[in-house]
Length: 41
Length: 297
Image (cartoon, rainbow over all chains, first blue to last red; front, side, top):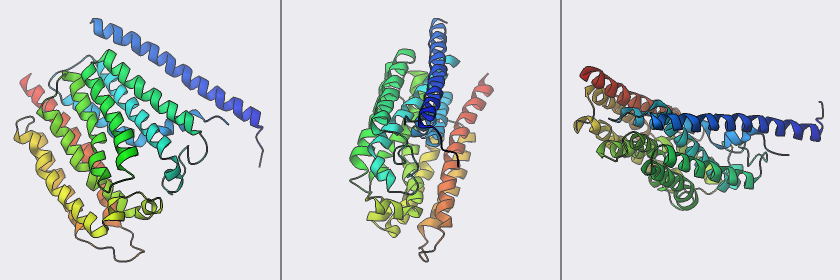
């Protein structure tokens, strides 16, 4: 079985988390924008 | 090692969340008033995120208990894939964020009920009732009954008899649903000292109580029809679904475990049907509302 380098594994996890966090942040910004438009309508 | 994003997602109990989202959405769609689709989406998102936050706080508090039960031992905290502080902060963040967004975007009455539902689940049920009384699921079941009420209030800004009845239906549905599960995972609860009804009062008493709740659920589920809040489509569907629920409960209520090797098939069937029951009942509520609206239009 291949042993994973802990540092590489750590970086992989952090990259994955950052990617998801970024997507959620963009989604949240879009949602706030859409809410503003909806409340004005 | 930091926790993966998948573990944070698992902390929100996505499977439980699906029922929360569905009943919340049905409450919103069955309400007499309509709101902008973006606001409706936001309301449901807040209900889902709030439920996820409460679930994370539940797992933060119960990490040690979860480690002792086969069903929950693989969760991120007991499995050692996440530290407790991260779970607690994640839960608080989701809870506070969902309430604030609900308040700003939808209204503060809906936000207040959402806040109460989170505190109800994370504090009253998880911390206070669950380790102390076999009635934990009866009173604590109220936490899962909030979503249709919140959805309705998000659409109307008002609390009337109908959303309170929807709350009562889920409240009454929870004990037979959960005790059916507790009957076939009894050993696990006993091992970690959780006073679930089958552990404390015994199987016979639990089976009788399941039956009692199923009997009460039958007229209660049709109450929206009786008070004129829905049409016959919902009313008849509710009576049929609840009668079947009662029949499944009768099989559980009137039987005894034959041996330690008992596969508990009727209990498992009741548990599975109870989930289908709630989905179908609330789907009928929305279908009925749309049919009446269509007829008026």
